[in-house]
Length: 456
Image 1: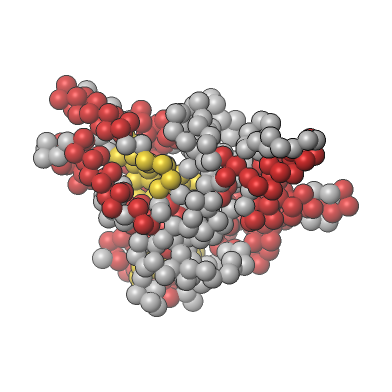
Image 2 (image 1 turned 90 degrees about the vertical axis):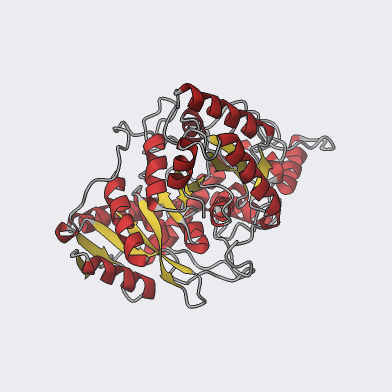
C-alpha cells in the first residue's frame, strides 16, 4: 500500500513531482478498474492541481506537509463540478455546486482530489454490492467482500492506487471495509469533522472518516480534518487535532470485549507485553445495540431520503400524469431494492400506532447505552474488540445480523480505530478496533501505533 510519509519524502527530495505522482495514481486506477472502486476520475483537474502544487514547492510556498499528495473521496461527499451520485440512479447525473468541508479541507492543504469512490447506494449495505454501478471487488481476495459502505475507498487503499481516502461511517462503514481490506480505518468522534456537504443517511450518527495504510497516516489526515465549521450545526467547538501524545502503556487500563476472538486475544496479549493492564470488560446492553441502531437508522434514513422526489432532487418522470404517479415512478426507479426496503421499514416505525412501541423505545435504550458506555469508559482508558467478529465474508453471502460491537461507538458518538492485526483463518489480514471516550483520538492513534509495531 502507498503511505504518506515516503511520498512526502520523495516530493521533498525532488525525486518525484506531484504531477508524476498524480499521473501514476491515475494510471494505477485505470489498470485496476476491474475492481470497480471508482465512479468518477478527476483526470485533467487532478493533473492541473498537481502542477500548481509543483509550482508552490518550487516557490517554497507549500500549503501543508501533504501538499501534492492525491486522495480519493467517497461518492456521498459533495464535490463542486464533479459528479456526486451516492452510487444511485437517483443521483446518477447530479453535479453539486459546492464542496463538502472535509474535501475542501484536504484541498486547502494542497492535497489533490483524484477520484470519487464507489459505495453502497446511499450508504445502505455491508459489502458495497448495492451500488447502482456494480459491486466493488476486494483487492486482497476477489472472492471476499470489501466491506461496506465505504468499500470503494478501502479498495483504493488496498490496491495501492491512492495513499489516502475519505469515507463515511454510520454503523461501521469505515471500520468494517478497513478490516476487510487490511488497512486502517478511523471514525472520529461525532462532531470532530464537519459533516457539511455529506449526503446524509443517519444524521445523528454519520461521521466523516479516513482510510489509510498506516495509523500515522490517519493521524496526519485528522490534523487537517478536525476543526470547527460554522456551516455544520453538529460541528463541535474543539481545538484542532494536534497529534498523538506520548503514552506510558504501563499506566493504561484496556477493557476487552469479546476476548475469545483470536485476533483480539492476540492484540490484548501484545498490549500486555507493553505493560498495559488488560482485563475482560462487560457491557450488559450489547445485546440490544444492533436492534436499537437499526430502528433509529431506518427512521432517520426515511426522513433524509424524503428530499429525493423528482422535484427537489433526483431523476424526473416526464411520463407521469399526476403527482402521485410522479412520486411513485421517481422513487421506484431511482432507488434500488435495499434503499426502498429500508425507507418502507422506517416509515412503518414512525406510524402513529408503532412509534411509541419501537422508535421511542429505541431512543430510550440509546440513552441507557450511552450511560453504560460512559460508566465503562470511566473505569478504563480504551476498549479493544474485533472489527469483524464473523470474519471476512465471501461475496454473495446474505447480510448478517447487525454487528453490535461495530454500532456501539456510533450510537454513543465515540471515536473508533480499526487496525490490521493478526491473520484470519483463510490467511487474510485480521483487524481489531480500539474505542475511547469522546475526542480521545490521540490516545487511540498512539495505541494503534503500538499494535502496528507489535503486529510486524
